Image (tube, rainbow, N blue to C red; front, side, top):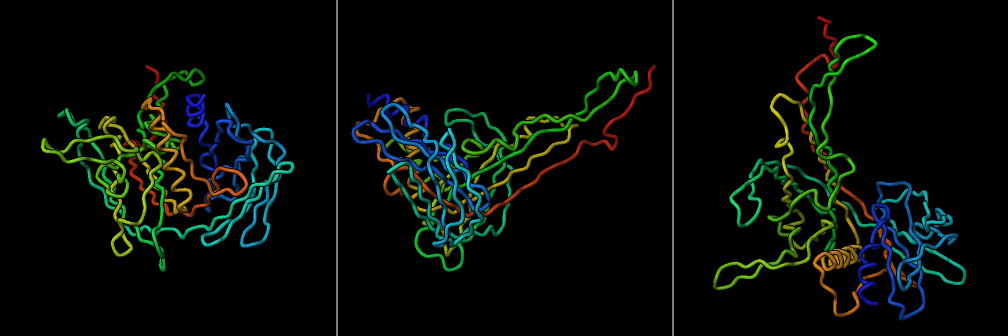
Length: 349
């Protein structure tokens, strides 16, 4: 039974504003309300997931009443649909104290969070490098190394927590021909070949091997034979903290595969990288690390000997409620195809 529980827990762990968590229970206690919401100040409509813990799966809760308050004033309310989803319209800002309350019959669950202040992006440099595909191979591939300089908000105190998300749109432009039956001639069009589209985002969109903050849990051990690598928890959610900042500033080192590798010289190209650095609470940071650990354990085929500890900031239930602020860096590398005439009609011979 516990094996089934762990597998289901991993499979339904996420899908909120960006993803939402769905937790299950091993049946040892009564069903509890689950609040799942990872929201951001960049959005005005916030999706809240409401479910209940269960023995085999999380069960969505329809018709639950959800209210959202900002700085002690109720600003939005709604009722969850048949899929346990409730969308609330509210404008949130850094520094706000945001509370959520969910009632389903006689059960009530609530959570409160204070939105952290966003980082400031000071600047960005790029380098073109080549990296070995593996430790035991001499084969290399081209990468773009982004060196993103960030700064803590003025007056920030204590350890701050962050999450890095990369959205990428990349591809090439090329000319193609087709027969136009109405014009009775050949028509040349400019087409695009998408390597990545705007929906493709991290995890997996970048590498962070050389960044101390982002690779904090990629551990290594020194021995007499040299450095031996062993598995740590992969940073699937791009989490890092301000412990590595020097005088309030830090340079993130992020490697992105150079998609120009796929292009031909006579084609145009585009590569638009949008880095979003979310300032998150410690509760969200701990929750996402626990999720990453569970996912890695599941993929490795290793069962945990004890029930997993999933951090929660929800009173009267379980789950996670977080609201982040964000800093955005958009890097555009685009070269249109070397033709002024996008569509050219060729005379019939």
